[in-house]
Image 1 (cartoon, helix red, strand yellow):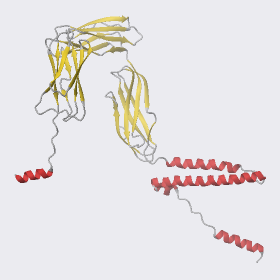
Image 2: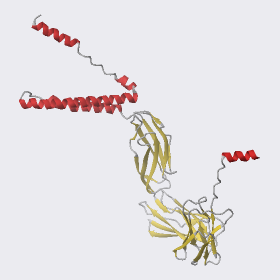
Image 3: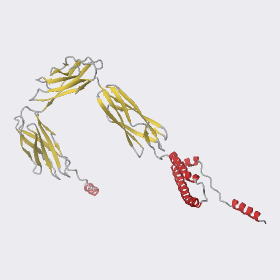
Length: 420
């Protein structure tokens, strides 16, 4: 056999014995593998990139030597191969995506700008499930009764969107407002998402307060409060004389700034009728946006001397820690009040009396020790002497739940039943 024939025979033998490369799995087969398939795909891509980078690094060192010796003249393809492979691997990882559900809102905050008081603000928050599993929205909680949530999308598949409709009633608001909405879902990275709607509420006329409350006592039946009226319109505002539907109130209108700012003085007119006293004040205006102003008013009758709380409630006996109970004593009478000689019919309890506002407001503190326990049928009472002739002694009783009953052992119960 000639030398050329031997060389051809040897090349054919090497070709027949070369190992076969396995075909990569089809994308559909990888998808059927679920999370395991995605994990293997990413892991395989990382391994391939690492191997190629290692080969590139090694070849680069060899090329440098060759370049130094003058045997290599072009190494550009080698320099661009690594970034291209890294970009391909990143694209594969991005296509796989997170394995669990993931909620992403187009915007978590809606600024409705400026609306007129009384207008309804409506907005629909849109979100997308950018995860790899079904997103479930279990609850949407609003911050107050002025805001309501409509029927929201409760289940969103990967790659699809859902919505949460919100409505805000601006009737009782003025100025800058903000309301929050809390969304609960099965996204483990953010199980709760807080949304917000905000903006400015414009009122043609601001009335503050909308409801005037006057506090009186049996000794001080006369009292006065004020209501501020401010116009936000460009045209000057004109108000008619105020009228009240209850003779127990007297109303007087004052002008602080013509056409802009006014003040309404509301007074009680003794003698006041017994029970709850309420009324409504009405003013006509020159504003077409708010032609009538209505202001509610009420009298709150307070005791001349008032102690709060009226009863001290202690933790169950025996107490595991010290307990300080504070009693606020307020004088609503015409004369100043003096308190003295605080007392309690239990030696282990300490007392401290503090005068916060001279002749008007006091705080009486009772300190109960660890292990304090009232005996069955015992009456414990905190008291203090007063300079008021109708209230010479102010008393506050003490209440405590009894010691819990001890559980009866099973053996003892069986023995008692057998003896019977």
